[in-house]
Image (cartoon, rainbow, N blue to C red; front, top):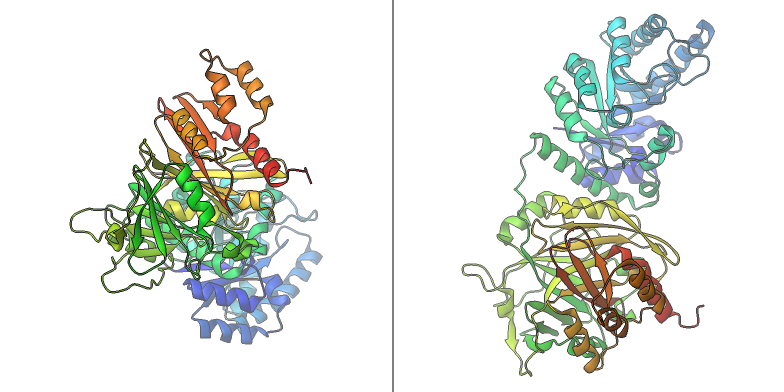
Length: 613
């Protein structure tokens, strides 16, 4: 199907919005009136610009407060409409959006509304324009899609149809049965379909609409269910996004447009009108790659954790460290972070160690790469010497490189074969594996990151949680595969300029966290110090075996329980922008110790700012 996006959904000038929409692969745009009014381009110049970019102008919007008004007011409306329809001829737009009236002058009179809309459609027809009438969820007298359709049906004018908007419908509709009326609308009378998702919030619907819409798949609405019903009517117009969102209005237009287009591709896949390469869900984290210009601090920390330096890349300054099934690459190359958006967060590789890449064990790396490319994930160029494993890598929205790889599996390129064995002492006792990698996101890309990991990697998203930080709230939402062998808690920090909020961490699973922390301390490692008040609170909340709580207090181990089991975990100090977590899951515990996050965050701030400044 054709796809379109309203210019109000993107930031920047009209020219910048059109360019971003075209580069993301949209077929058309809705021109929002304010964007045109603020542009130095004449309507004919906008039309030419769109044609050069391969875009059609699918809708001009909006006209407001048109119907069921006193005669003298309607006469002024027709005068205004004549001017706008002439403008649309120059613009090359053949459909205008008319929103249901919110004017205090409007009357609760469907017959009058139908008659005046019919007269408006007469005028529009003279200019080759169609009128798409839409029910605003906060309309004065018309606020539901079925009411708007009844008025259009009464008017019975060929140039008058309805516009269905998923936000206006789903923000007011309690359940699927209330959507049954969509099936009563002939497809040819649905002149336009506007789409937006939204988080489920208990607030005034106007404020909800103006500030909190998001792209399909990023909120709580059943947008796919609504689209499926619309398509069954025979509707063959574009799927168009109209998203009012404060974050999108401040973010760069290009990445936002790509996020928008990806959301429509996934939506079309869900409703069965687009065939994409199927998702290939990763089965494990093969490795995490750290980049640094000074390897000594991270090498000391890895050594204290019990890792051994087992290999060296044949042609690159990259060391392989292993402990059990956990593998960490340490890259000291000067250009090791070319794709990361670390710079946009106020940092650079010179600031210290940073997480640059994650290797994902994939059942079919080539198929996973095809899925990623079809969903607009940039495939990253790699400098590969002769004999290096041909690995595919794509960029996540935050710039993290995701390698789609296999480890010692017959018939597939083995990334491990790129490393020559290095002489080393045996790794410490234990069998670590990477339990999860926590990825802090740029503030304007949190929802995009969740959709990316769900759609491109086939991971399931858990509920969003808010975590108290001394300087605000952190928003976090985890994505994981079915058995929990791949887990990524995605977090957006409270303080954009604060390194504590931007640090990422790698969680290492162990069967005995107490023994692992004791080995860390004995090797000179320093766990994050946890306040004594935390353990006093644990004593009040839970019962422990004799000496158990004292051990946790001594070693800085935190404790949590859920309905499934127990979680014990401990954090290292931060090196650059990375720290490690040692975790022990017992009895099927599913979470990440969110109840302890405020304590951890406060402790990290205290270590970084020991004077409290």
